[in-house]
Length: 214
Image 1 (tube, rainbow, N blue to C red):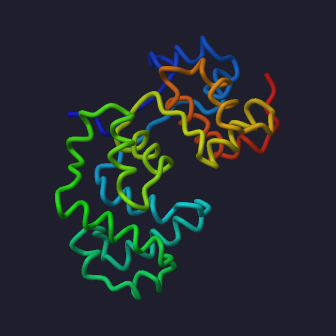
Image 2: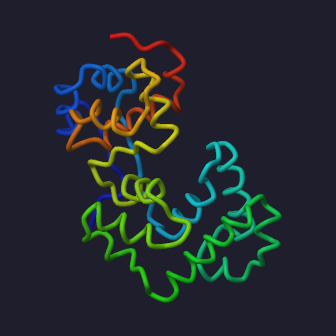
């Protein structure tokens, strides 16, 4: 079984690899220090919250997710969501389209069309294909699932706004086109997700407000 609590530090093979390959990421790793994170246990809950967060700032997304948590009495599950009306979901700030997506996800889970445990055995590309077959789940959501639930090591979230904000800071660029980002970050493979985690942490801790210099 995968260890759900993971610590990254200078002794971690992935961190050592990144430090050798990219001096800029090496500096970020030094600035951020050790990272400890816990993988998300509940796939359904994670996807519901990720659907809510689509096209929203983290602050607004967190507020709506907290309201849903309260509405569900702390248990965001398919059974509980089914007991809530569209009006109840709308009243806490979830849009009509996202309510529809959450309903589709819930039906897909209940019908057995997707088995979260089986996703562990699939390749990154296969997981993306499975998840994006569900209406309302795109590549961004699938990438977040690969990184934060399955702990896949080589996901480059080129369509994630927070990652791109930190990327621009790191490389002092405004060119965030997917092709350019992929070329620039190719040196991170096979640990793109680890580099992304350090950039997320740098952003969250306010380090990106200071000009980056080697």
